[in-house]
Image (cartoon, rainbow, N blue to C red; front, side, top):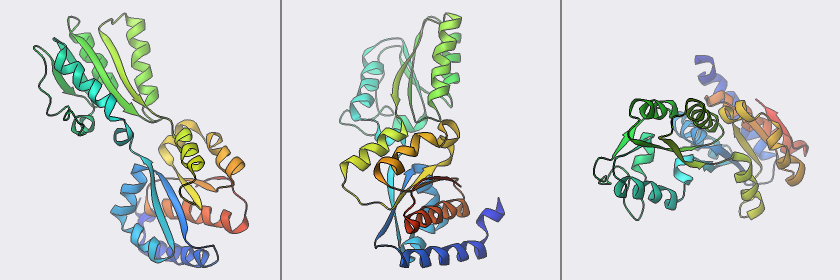
Length: 249
């Protein structure tokens, strides 16, 4: 792990970024699709260094919690405040999202109801198993990384005849979000930095339309400084050669 944060190697990569940026039309805008990349860019100090080198990183769809419409959060609030004897299970960050009706953390549950923070959808299913007399609703948000786990609990509940378990879904797919960004045409992008963890689940093929239909390069990368820089350099190299594709870095 330390090798992926080696200062001298990072400095060399930044110099390579600067050289490539000078050979490309300005500004060089690259969208990091994932919120984990956004946090890693800030935490590592790479964002201002990249900007100084001629590359502007633009934040993309990011966090599934943040892009969940207020109406779905408000539906969860209505459930727990109006229905008695209900357990609304969800991830902690879902409870802090502000809406016109407040947040789940501030909501006053109906008689016998409560909001329970869980660490996985399996925790929510186990809650339903242990309290068969209570209705348990899992308020689940996520991209392709968490969708399979949520779907798994629904299948298990069906197979085990756990009839008091249900899911309020706020599930989103990355490729359609990217298509919407490109079709909106509001920002000229030199490329997309694709998330490593989502790509482990869906592979490379779902991004092929970005290069094929829109001529925009992309690269899959992890979340360490050198992994991100390798992805950015790959994108810039594709742009310089006018050869867009989906690189797996």
